[in-house]
Length: 348
Image 1 (cartoon, rainbow, N blue to C red):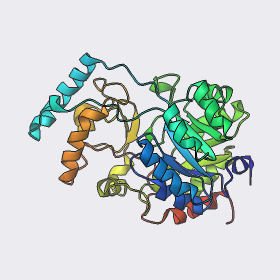
Image 2 (cartoon, rainbow, N blue to C red):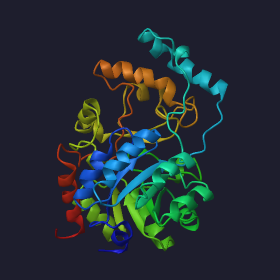
Image 3 (cartoon, rainbow, N blue to C red):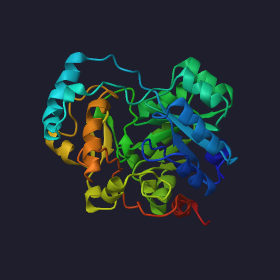
Image 4 (cartoon, rainbow, N blue to C red):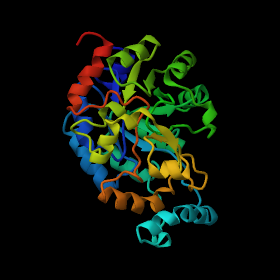
């Protein structure tokens, strides 16, 4: 037990990272049963789906985490959208479709009063956010039912901001982490640092617990993070090939192949930098493509290309999210993966 396990109500100071698009409540339930804090990503869930998944989690009687994005929806930019569709037009021509026939859409919604209405009936033990924190009134609603609030910081300045604005613990997200970067004070990627450089700096600056995330794939990585002062760790990539994950066969194959040794940050799939395994569209358009509309508007126009090629058995236009260390990815139950990671905390 340490101050993080006391805060979270778990056996281990270990959080299974919320990973939208590759999991449902099943992964969170399995990780939670083994003593971690299971997490449910909610940014892509409609209210009815969120209620269904929350009921599954609530029925376990164990604490769990629900995760949301906190971005400000961008104003549509017709010129930028047109530039983006022009860049994608040759790929649409290749599959015999009209890029301009694809409707625009947001792809992901930020935390809102409607989402809080759903959550309030369940009162989850932990609510976490990406890209900062929600507006003060919304955050106050979450705090009012006693929820522990977490959020990700990619710099010391972001960590200090989160602590000052109500976060009960801060996730130090190193540059190695898979999926979306959690930055919110600056879009300058040169400010981003690796986990083991970022962690001790944030730990020295904060009073609240600090959770290390990024590149932690096994018990040795857990041990290293704890030795540098982490109060706990968050692990995502190591769960992507678990039995309970909904990761596609294409994505699993990439994670367990030599291709996973190389990952890149890319804006192509959502408009915001996120780390994944390079594929055709990243190589041909450039991974950090300025033509992509602001997050999350890039998703709409690339989605049909993804769907087409996935039907052909190819991940050429799929977001193959992965951290820089996929060595922990294995076909096993999430409980077994959790138990293996927990050895980093000491004898089980």
